[in-house]
Length: 359
Image (cartoon, rainbow, N blue to C red; front, top):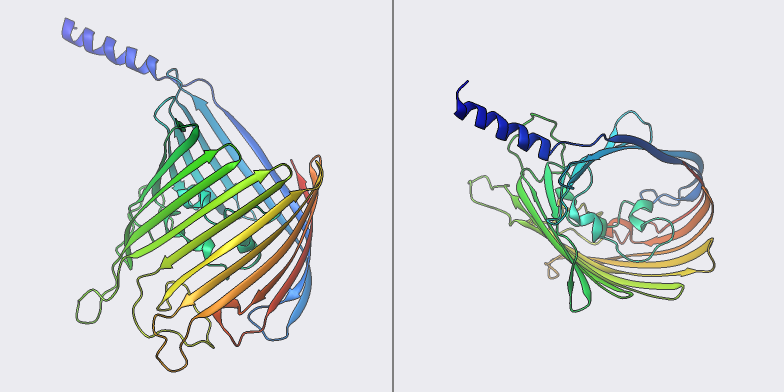
């Protein structure tokens, strides 16, 4: 073996030692909720029901560390039926350059910004799927890579930046080695910034994706989709308050929906916008209560047409949570007016009590 080969192999061996991983570990966590739920269904007039159910969550998390201080982790979570996965992603965190996350079903930056108002049990979108604010940037959930900067000090405030890119922003998972086919949407990008100063926290986020729909003549018939949201939260003693506003332009053109029809996001022409207000109070170390108010508007953008006008959907939710070690008892009561932005739809009221056990 000549000296050049010896030098090359020695350098390669040294580089491998420099980034070798320490022994990793795998942990399992999860919990179960036993729920009693009663309420009227938003989609059916004057229909009510009562049900007992279970919600089972199991997550596997593993990881390790390289000699240079870089850490890596992988998280996989199962569905309630435990026959499929709800999420799976890999995170690589460097000592000074921030972290990179790649995965599907979760982990995109929008999770840090949507519905960011104080709530002691559930975000109201977990209670009803009609909440639009939860949909801001959700098309970035799969086939994405997200970068989170280190938190840096700016005049006493702590600032963090999030950036994301999805090669195929259609919210459909593509497995290893798979290539998504061309379709309605192209690539997507997202960016958000969080600023924390003492007990105050502010965040603003935006996401955009290419819209490939075309008219029969082959001319672009729609705009690229844009979603945006901002929030502000403040805590003083046992009380936390928060306010958030959102805006979704799906880029869909066409005939605006009438006031007496259900509106399907990214199908109905028009914009969705609105706000949420939340307040939470820690009564003591174990008991907390919160109130959330959401008002969302379907902006038809064609108010002069017959039967077409803006429609408001309003939601009020009261929540209470009591915890004792690994056990918790939580409950909410929620009222929805004009569900799915349909003025003729029956109002919905839902009550749930849940016993939770975590491990």
